Image (cartoon, rainbow, N blue to C red; front, side):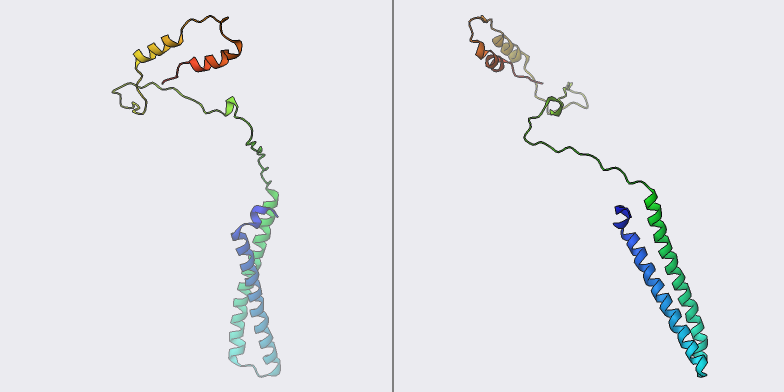
Amino acid sequence: MNTSLTRSIGFWLLLVVSLAATAVGGWLIAGQIGTMTTTLLAGTATGVEVYVGQSLVVVGAGVLAAGIVGILLSLGLVAARSLVPAPAPAVVEAIDWTAEPTEKDAPIETTSTTVEGSVGASHDAEPVDTATATADADAVSVDTDPSATDPSDTETDAEETAPAVTR
């Protein structure tokens, strides 16, 4: 059996109710036919035992038939489910929490331009003062003699003197 069918409450409910109906129907039929046979052979049968007994046997036969149909349906479900292929489990990589994030893991940065006064303008963006940005750019682009600096400090100097990115 497939695990999805065995975990289904409806399947198990159908099977249990069908088994119970089969048992109750069989008990009704066996009890009434036994009583009718005993009293008819002894010659002590009354109209209630004979005529009501026949009606209870018919009711028991209906309940027994419903139980058998339910059992056959549950067996049919099991057979049909075994013909349907189970989906392959998805392979998931383990996450290495100690690894440094790579470029592809970095969040995607988007730039947006806003127009003042437009309907969809973003009010979260900070305005950029062009005079201050130009003065900062001039301060950074001071000519220095590359031979005068220590080669080990070139990376840190480039990082420290880089202008701040504004949007």
